[in-house]
Image (cartoon, rainbow, N blue to C red; front, side):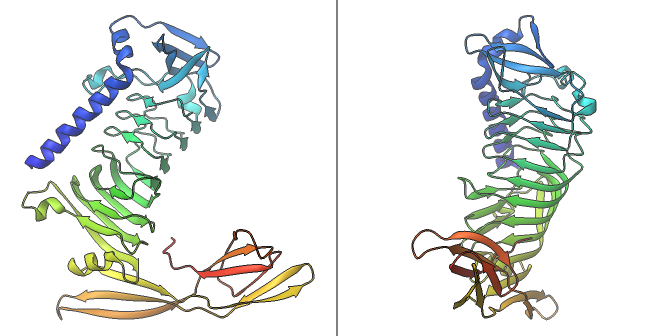
Amino acid sequence: MLIEKKIALCRKIVSLLLCMALFVPGMVCRAQERHYHTSGIYTYYILDEQKKEISICAIDSTEKKIIVPSELDGYQVCALGYESYPYDNYEDFQEMGGKMKEHMEEMVIPTSVRMVWAFAFKDCKRLSKVSLPEGITLGYASFSGCDNWKDIVLPYNTTCEESALPSNHTDTLQISNSIMGENIFFGVIQKMILSVKKDTVFTLAVPWVSVTVKQLISPKDVTKLMFNFSDGESRVEKLYVNGKQTKIEANAEVRMGYVAEGHVTFGEIYTVEGAEAIRFAKKNKIKYHVKNTAEVKKVMRKKKADTFLHTWKKAKTTILSYRYDKEGKAWKKSTKKVPTVYELYGRKGKKGKYQRIGMTKGRKVRTKYKYVKVRSFNTWDV
């Protein structure tokens, strides 16, 4: 408990310092009366006159798709909503104004925007798609109640404050790095996809509050998955680990002798032969599946008019499943053969780079490329 409290305090301090560093000039202006300006459908106020930075606080539009501009009247749009900070009273937070709340279904936020203030788009019920830039901070409850936004992509270096995202039900959630804020993800996430850009270690459970992840997909280049410091009872029903070297750590605070407020459990793990994830599954007696695909040894080619017909022999794909029998205190093994998926790469001449053509479950392809490489697809792709 002591470690968790210290971590929570440190995060709040870091969040506060970040906001202060980005918007210190604006904090001075907050004590003064704001002056609002209108440019077309947008209402804004000045955050920093010297830097020419503004925040849009109202969008008076009935359009279904809003593309937020990066500049207005010679000023850079660097924020959306009314200024707010972690130490403010929640009662003082204001939602953005204008007709957009009743009509907007899609919004594109430019790279100039660094901050979406608290409550900015709260309860925009029709909003179903949001394009965010890298390095953005989503303030407290900024998109809470936007329950039609079910396919969420958080770009690299996104920061989320408490309750920043919709909390009912998410179809897909894609993240490119650890999301360290607290009380961000709730309820059910149908599919969670990790997309590596720079960071290869993902801290996942810190922002979870009694979350159920139906499918969590980790690519080959992830080096570590950490499921620690969850709030409430969370569960990953199917964890797909495509990297052989990907290590898994869960509920570490319990093993270190500290009492945890939350816990993460796992249903099944899907991985590849020789993976570190197998050790984790065995140690915790979690049912696991290992995918093993043979390589294509030779591709044969025939000229067909202006194209080439490439064929190859079948490569077997086998899934080995292991389930721990508690009564017999032993692992039970079952084997299943499944169709092999092939990745195709081609080039026209002897020199040059191979280009990806596509994927197939068949054993032949007719193409303009004279030279074709065929690779067995050994990744769990769901």
